[in-house]
Structure formats: C-alpha cells, structure tokens
Image (tube, rainbow, N blue to C red):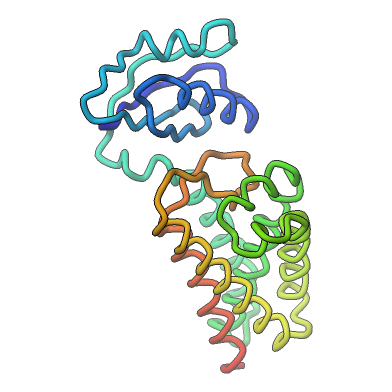
Length: 233
C-alpha cells in the first residue's frame, strides 16, 4: 500500500537522502521514494498501521516537515520525474544541435542525443562520486567485484559524451557504448529478479529514483542506438 506525502524544507540531494533514510526507518515502511521539490511516496507493508504522526516523528528535530498528500492521475510517474526531466533536456539538446545543420538528420540526432546523455549523466555522477560508487556497487556486476569500477565508470561516460559530441572514433565509441550499456542492463536485470528495493544511481544519487525495468529499457535503448550508428553511417 502506498502513501503520498508532501515534505517541506528539502533543497538538495542530501536532504532527499536524509528524508528517505528516516522514512525507511519507520516500522512498517518497506521503501520510500523521495523527490525534489517536496514529494515522497512510501510503500507500507500490508496490514501495517502507519499514520502521518509516525512520519512527523521521524522528521522531528530536523528542518523538514511533512503532511499527507494526494495521489494524482499521474502519480505513478512521480518517482521518475527527475529522470524524465533529464531525458527532456537531452532531447532538446539533440534536436537543437541537429536539425538546423544536420546532413544526416537521424544519425546526427542520435549522435547528439548520446553525447548529451553521457555528458549530463556522467557529470551528475562525478559531482557525487563517492555516493554514486556506493550505490552502483549494489547492482552492477563489475562494480560489485571491483569497487574501483564505480569510481571509473562516470569518467567513461564523460569520455563517451565528448567523443560523440566531437564525432571522432565513432565506430570504437559505438562498440564500447553497446558493450557497456548491455552489460549494465544484465546486472540490473539480475538485481530485479533477486528482488529487494534499490535506488538507481543513474542521476548520481542526487535524486531518489527507484531501480526498475525503466532503467533496463534506458540502457538497452542506448545500446540499440549505438549498434544502429555503428552499422549505418
């Protein structure tokens, strides 16, 4: 059973993480998805009695306050709004750069999309590197075995973003992208099959986005686009 809450006082990723941690410590709560500027969706165990006073107590002594909210018709999208916003920015980036001068509109649009995606998402990960590496280790196959990979991966994304933007070493760039994205999707799929609640590290930990099949689809979309660009210049 879900409860929708409105949280006042959140201003940054650390606020989101702090509120999420306190809500998930409430007895009967199995998971919490907290998003800027002021929303939280908590999953409560079937049969558990968790009223608003429990959440107020969880935030006592902090600058945050909480009250009951209402689920909208698009409430299911709320946990993914930060991800949707970032994708919207990348879509605009690719469109603005492509269509005024694009000689091969589809190929150029894909290249700019990939470049913008890796630059934006890589920068978010680098800006919160330690937290990202810790979260990434929870579901990535390589990072779980070699923790240093969690610190290296964001710079790999930035490098791919630069290479796509400069349109250099295109074949090698597409091959690396296809391999990295597919490998990542496999790790996420395994984690989802094992069950449990996990926050996606895709936005560097600044936003609480749940790890779901949406993340698998995101990775596979990038892999398919890379394969397409590798074979159709």
